[in-house]
Length: 442
Ligand SMILES: NC(=O)c1ccc[n+]([C@@H]2O[C@H](COP(=O)([O-])OP(=O)(O)OC[C@H]3O[C@@H](n4cnc5c(N)ncnc54)[C@H](O)[C@@H]3O)[C@@H](O)[C@H]2O)c1
Image 1 (cartoon, rainbow, N blue to C red):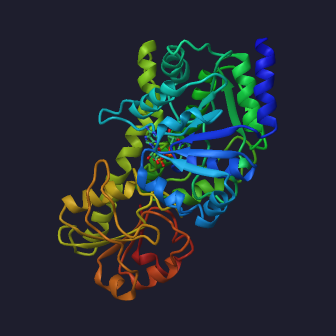
Image 2: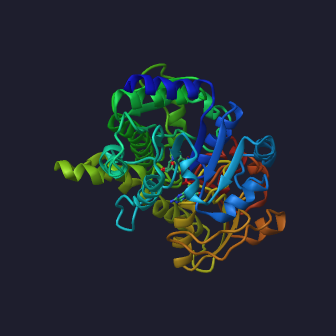
């Protein structure tokens, strides 16, 4: 009987007769919405931000990587509807949760968004619904936090409703891999949950990778991000040592990258940015405490990466000093405030830490970022600044330009030609030996 019911739900997924509900329409949720629409599913998007809902209803995108026409076509076809009315959660057969998982001030998991969403789902849970968490989180969240809340309705897991976890691997700004080309790890709480989750994602993703439990899938995502965090910290530390030794770390990495096995290049930068890699590892270190375990690599990587903006500011100070100038009173142009190349997102960007440190030392800051016209208030920072047009006049007025984000739109050769001094944290001046006297790598 139970198996027949599961087969019935699977049949509906295969025939695309299910409605997909996606909660949290941000960098992760919105591309997923479009992928399901592209594949011919009806999608109902949910967000607490009524401004986003209103924009989407009008067929307008708020993300640089997604065109408005892409959204408008699905709204027009009747495949996509969006709402901030969570009582409509009864409608979707499959609900995917893509809400934020930030840290509290004390670097502890802030699960309020997952908890609130679970409460909304619980209030409307009905037989046959499949719930999948996509947000990055510590191992155990799906089964220890979400499952008990949903079971408190009296409905039975694996029989009346289904629950799974599938981490998102979205890489904003990456044009090489689209959502459906990135393999997706999936897991279910029970075998029937796993079957449902696998079937669902197989309709929209080229390669689905089922694993034995949600905890395995949760830790898989954290391993991917910790791997990046630790390796970035390693090259950042080596960069600081190489600088002291008078060696160009970029040349070293390029040479090491010629090894055809056992080496994957990571590149140093101005510090760790974005809202995944600086944050997610702490979800694991927090959970590890429950097992009397200290995740030393995570803390060490965090410590090194947090230090890099201070190092960059010291390099700026030294470079100015070498020209008989002080940071106090200096006019500094920050080139790029986004947390990485060609994205319009400055959350957790190391540019913000660098700018604050420079201001504290009395420098006057300008910034230019083609994707970020003005700086909104951030969790830890408040700058009342607008992007300055990048002109020869501006470059002549400043004492130094600091390349923090290597956006493809900026002509660095032209910048180097006109600026008095360049502090380069991204190696954009690699082939500019002619201007070596005014270039400082940091
Ligand atoms: N951005 C990435 O590159 C990326 C990649 C992989 C995984 N992730 C993970 O995916 C999750 C979402 O990240 P994101 O970058 O899309 O965040 P985001 O801030 O861009 O989007 C989250 C959306 O959820 C909405 N929201 C907040 N609380 C809500 C609630 N209670 N109900 C409904 N909607 C709510 C917000 O208004 C926002 O639109 C996080 O766990 C993140 O760690 C992000």
